[in-house]
Each structure stands twice: as C-alpha cells, then as structure tokens.
Image 1 (tube, one colour):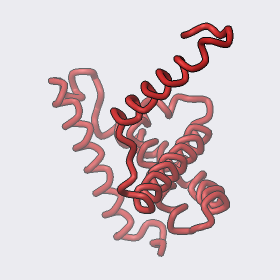
Image 2 (cartoon, one colour):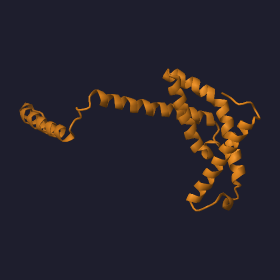
Image 3 (cartoon, one colour):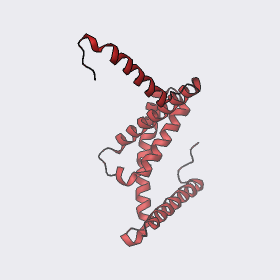
Image 4 (spheres, helix red, strand yellow):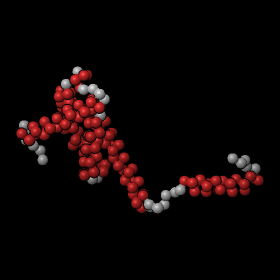
Length: 164
C-alpha cells in the first residue's frame, strides 16, 4: 500500500524516520564521547542528506533486487526477507558505502552473502535434525587412527617401505 505523495501520513512517517535517524546519530556519537556538533556536523542536515541518498538508492534498487532474489530463492517471502536484511546491512554501513562508485553493486553482493549464510545455516540445521545423535567424538577418532597407524605401520615395514 503506498500513500499519496504529500499526504499527511507520509509526512508523519518521514518525520518519525528522520527523528529516529537523528537520535541514532546522537546516541552513536555520545557512545564515543562526542556530539555531532563537536565535529561541525548539524545532525539534522547530516542525517537528512544521508537518509535522502539512501532512500534514493532504495527506491531505485528495491524492485530489481527482489526480482533477482526471487529468481535465486524461488520464494517471494524469502526474497523479501533477504532483501530487507541486505538493505539493513547497507544502511548500517551507509557512511562508507555511499561514497563507493557503485553502492548498488555492494547491495547486491551483500544480498547474495545473506542468501549464502542462510543456506549454510539451513543445511547445518537439516543435518543436525536428520542425524542428531551421531556426532563423532574427536578423541575416539584420534585413538582409532593411532591404533590403525600402529597396526599398519608395523605390518608393512618388512617390504622395503619406510616407517613414518
């Protein structure tokens, strides 16, 4: 559902969003003992410009990213989740990413990495669900190899082979 441009609801959402970003900037700077003003940064302008450029990239790339992710995953909800996580990771690094030659490329690479991470976790969870009790004991495996090496090492020394 999209709101009509210039509607009161859209303005309230944008103002709330900008307020949260401004608060996030202030809290982040406070955690390192500084305020945005100490660096000559007007919080409202810095966050507003940053948010505007991020929003511009979001509007330009959202549909294309979701189409690519849908083609990869075959699931619309999964594609949307991965896309949201990729945009979130991009926003967390936007101060560095925004100056890159191709932030959209960074976004797509991030989305692919999110997909791979999820796939690995799913595969690991499936393996554990299928065979939860059969985890190899590392000490038993080492002892078995040691015994096998001793038996094999002793029986093959007489045929001209060196022992290791």
